[in-house]
Amino acid sequence: MKTALQELIQWTIENAFNVEAQDGTTYIAIDHEEMRTKFDEWLEEEREQITNAVKYGFKDATSVNPDVSFDLYYDETFNDDV
Image (cartoon, rainbow, N blue to C red; front, side, top):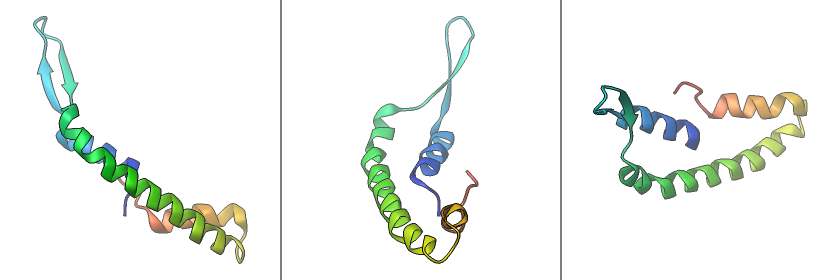
């Protein structure tokens, strides 16, 4: 599973395209209107992920060193590879 931010980054990478200006400069562009259709979905995912992190992270912290449990929760729940 990826975090909502990781999904946004991946979507951006997959949907970016090059635009060449009249002076020959190349820019990377993203269709904002297309991206906008995904915002609500990502926000809802983020809300659910935060809720679960609090719910399960605190539960795990009661039986494990708190300095380790939140990192462990993240590492076990989310894939860092974008």
